[in-house]
Length: 350
Image 1 (cartoon, rainbow, N blue to C red):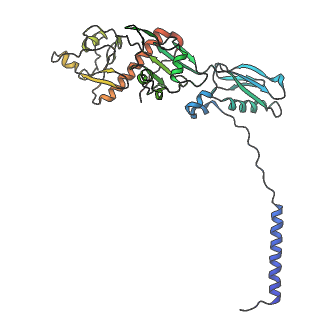
Image 2 (tube, rainbow, N blue to C red; image 1 turned 90 degrees about the vertical axis):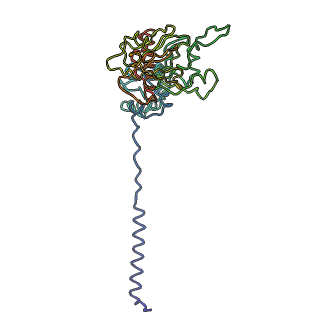
Image 3 (cartoon, rainbow, N blue to C red; image 1 turned 90 degrees about the horizontal axis):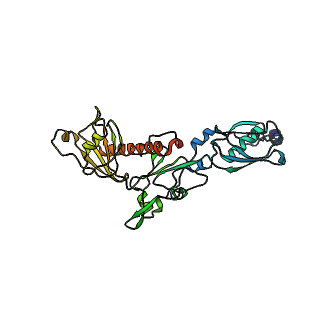
């Protein structure tokens, strides 16, 4: 191995020493960069669209009441501030702030951001006073029919209890509920929720006792109702009184008869529970031609006439149930509630 000259060894050592010193000085010269604090987030009511169902119970809305306290400046405290019908709220210089759809914490952040434009380092505290914006509806064979405030988490049974419970009557000296649990339903977001009311009320199956949500619609039809429903492609769809020994053709005639587009060869009769119905196909075309007898009906049957040929009875049964629910909602809201519910809806099944 060949040794380096002395002058080369000395030069190499000097370069290494100077490099190490420069690196140390450079390291000492580094100044850490501290990120600026983020500005408070401003929440919009549109955030509510992404919320889970349970979170919607905690959001504010029109006619809710809140209290605002300004830490260290009690003269700026305001109690019983009402959120307007348009969902907006005003406090000091923060005028017309959209509060609808926000939680209490989100509203505090928005208000703090607005007030900080006029006051130095404001500290606001907001507490709920009264929740009035969230409601649910119960109609039918219920003691107190109408709209009820959903100001706390409520189960289906608790909601019925808040409405005074189900109507009862005497049958063979026994007290019985007058509601038809097979035809009872719960509508949420324009869709029927799968709840087995018979299991809940007859068997005490608490797995059916779900939590109510804002704008839920509960309906308990009468168990003593002998009406039937003629729906679909007839001239006057709706409820019809049932005479003894009435058949499909007689009831369709009472409903104004078939429309021009009615598919008479496969008329569906739905009998029994909405969740587990018995489905019967009737050939009214053959009955009209005197080639077959028309089918005899029972109380609370649903007759559905399609406007086009169909093959899958399951699909038409869903349409029949949906049409039944829509008809019941229209009859009750128009004839019994009046202006209480002003926006009719068309439910769909899942």
